[in-house]
Image: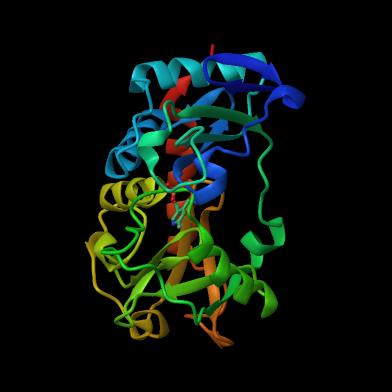
Length: 289
Ligand code: PMP
């Protein structure tokens, strides 16, 4: 596997970073996860924009324009002959000293990994997913804003541990006020009649690109789409609930905290939205060839 590392494509064994990199020492950096479908890098422009926006919020100079990031991404896919898979962009603060001061780090490190996609088991898509509500609350936007896709994912990992220890693969995360923020690595939606609801990002969620695209296809299907402050009430009373994410795409949630949601199986609207999203993801993006 060839890894893009600071302007060069290097062998995996040579793709190493310093122990003084603040990405490692402090989780000081940002990242992206992007999908490739049949040679189409889905929504790459949007992913690179979010990477640059996340970097800007943490005062991290990526040192590359969006166009340069897109070109480097295409180059990395070509070097690995990747037609279907998953890309990970990582930008770290770079090499500094053992102090916190980010200004000691002279140059950001830009890494692009072109890998296989780790999918949820197919059974989860057929039968739907069971999730729990994590006790770990989502970071407050005034502390570490969840809209920044930073290398600081401990908040999500603590919640994910609770999910796995409870025998499920995902969990709902509430914010400090008890409102739904998102899942540990996905956004959450509820369907009630012709209405599609998801929490506003200020409740503590990432502005997921899948989230945005699903809202777009739902509007095109004539659904009434809204960003709504939600508690578990909206999920208990929903017809259908699903999660969205680049890796997960659209996946039905059929059980929350050992209580069935809706009919307790993936619903027709979730399926329709999933298909429409998948079609868009195969077409809208940057072609590798
Ligand atoms: N929330 C969190 C915390 C995430 O890490 C992700 C990405 N895996 C998402 C939501 C979904 O975002 P996207 O649709 O852009 O992949």
